[in-house]
Amino acid sequence: MERPDGQPDARLHVAIIMDGNGRWARARGLPRTAGHKFGVDALKRTVEGAAEAGVGKLTVFGFSTENWRRPRGEVSELMKLMKAYVESDLERLARDGVCVKIMGRRAGLAPDILDVIERAERRTAQNDAFTLQVAFNYGGQADITDAVRTLAQAVKAGRLDPDAITEDVVGMALSSRGDAPDLIIRTSGEHRLSNFLLWEAAYAEFVFQDVFWPDYGPKHLKTAIEEFRGRERRFGAVEASKRAAS
Ligand code: IPE
Ligand code: IPE
Ligand code: MG
Image (cartoon, rainbow, N blue to C red; front, side):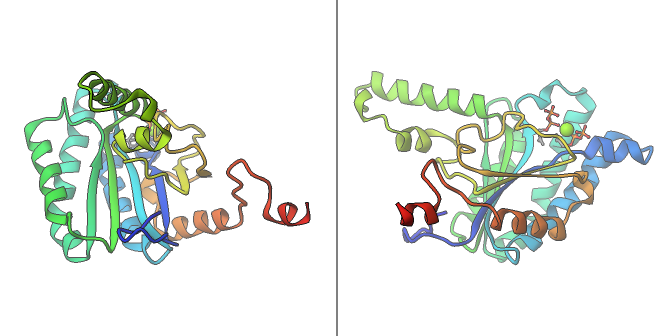
C-alpha cells in the first residue's frame, strides 16, 4: 500500500470474499436472508479488529454483478442490508477516521442505494486512519470492461495516446485505482475468485478458510494474516537468499 504522502505503508491491504451466508443459515434451518443478516455482524466485528491485526485497507466483496441472478427477494434483502449497514454505522466509522470507498458499477443501482453510497464516500473522504472498500455490484470483468471503454473514449477524443497506455494507466482506470491487495481471503471452503479483483489479484497471496462468513471475526483474520506472513512473495523474481548467492 502507499500512504497519501507517497511513503510505503507497512500495513496490509486485505481483501475478503465473504462467502457461506446461505449455507450457514441452511445448517440452522433458517432462510438464506438470515445468513446475510448475521453476515453483517461478522463484517462489523472484522472491521473493528482489522487495524489491530495490521490491516490498513480492507476490501470486502458485498455483491457481485452475477448476484442479480439470485431470487428477487434475496437480492432486495441484500440491498436493504447494505443500506441499513451504512445508515447505522456511518457516523461511527467517520468518527473513527475510516475512509469508506465503494467500488463497482453504479448504473443499475436504485436511487436510495446510490444515495447512501455517495453519502458514505462524501462523509469520510477526508479520513485516512483506515480504508474500508466495499465491492458492491462489482465484477472484475465488468470493471475491466468499463476501464477499457473509458480509455478508448479518451483515445477517440485525442486526450490519450495509445502508446501511453501502461499497466499503471489501466490500473488507474479501474474502480480500485489499481490498488492491489496483499492478501485475498475466501471463507466457506470455496476455492475460486468468482470474478473478484481479476486485475488486482495478479500477485496477491490467497488464504482459504473453512468457516462460513457469519461465524467470522478478528480471530480468523489474525490466523489468515499469520499464514500470509509466512509466505515468500517473489513477484516473478528469485528468492532474496538465492539472489545474494549468485
Ligand atoms: C455470501 O454468502 C454473500 C453474498 C454472496 C452476498 P452466499 O449467499 O454466497 O452463501 P452461500 O455461498 O450460498 O452459502
Ligand atoms: C461471490 O460469492 C460474491 C460475494 C461474496 C459477494 P458467490 O457465492 O456469489 O460466488 P459463487 O457463485 O459461489 O462462485
Ligand atoms: Mg456463495
